[in-house]
Length: 404
Image 1 (spheres, one colour):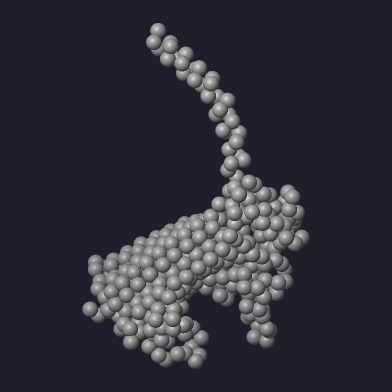
Image 2 (cartoon, one colour):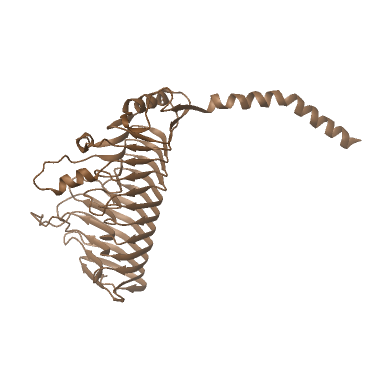
């Protein structure tokens, strides 16, 4: 009898609460997200021919001024866009850019080429970019630059995030950028996941992801193939985490180049792990000009890395001068210390697999090699050291040339 009474009470409670539960459920869409489709009400055209720049800007303005979380939806199709800036700060606490289509640059490379950036998010917070592709049509500008008789614009970064925080970029593909694919500058708390970049190995200055003057940045599960650094790490970068990346073609993952300026901020707390380099010019690199500077690099950890036919698998170059013309001849002022290389394996495309060419005025210190095994054409590779101090543990091949 007590069991029956309990069932009856439960049924009556549900009967009484049901209208209240339904009212809450019905109210949730209003409370949660405002949705803006670039086609509906804003006039974007998915044919890749009609300029949709103003439509995207109007959709951004509507989302930015919303007091709720907002969704900007870009359906399948190709959308022609000129350079544009998505500016904050916004009233909306969170804006999601859901891209199911491809954003394309104009055929005339000069339209983007004269701008610093193609798509630029400025002073925003709580923005997520999900999916989609960016096609910057870079080959026309690259061809111009390859012709010494032509005067060419510098080119634009495809996606730039500046002075922003709490940003997520997921599943984005960047194709054929004119210059850098993605730049993170003066930002905090940025996560990039499943990002891909594609450009020809000879494309000039097409860094995959460039980070500078930013902190708390994560790059995860990504694949970068391009004509310059897969990831370039500039001054003022703190707490950068790179994990599970495929790099190649490209110039590797590079800290620098540094010492361009005297009053340069340092780079610290960088972790690079579970990366495969394939056919790249460099693997893991730190580079600085031979110039005075107050900058530094410290607390960097490279681990669980595979090199496949990489020209310079491990390199510190404090006499960086890629043109080999009018190179500075000072001692680099960049202080490099506490750099760890752990479980680095694979093949070098050159005889010297490990090179530490450090500053005579500021020798590298605290370099740690642990379980390194790099070969050249199935034979032992070589190492080269100048002004480099550190220790080695476990099996280290080529043999360490570090001084204590």
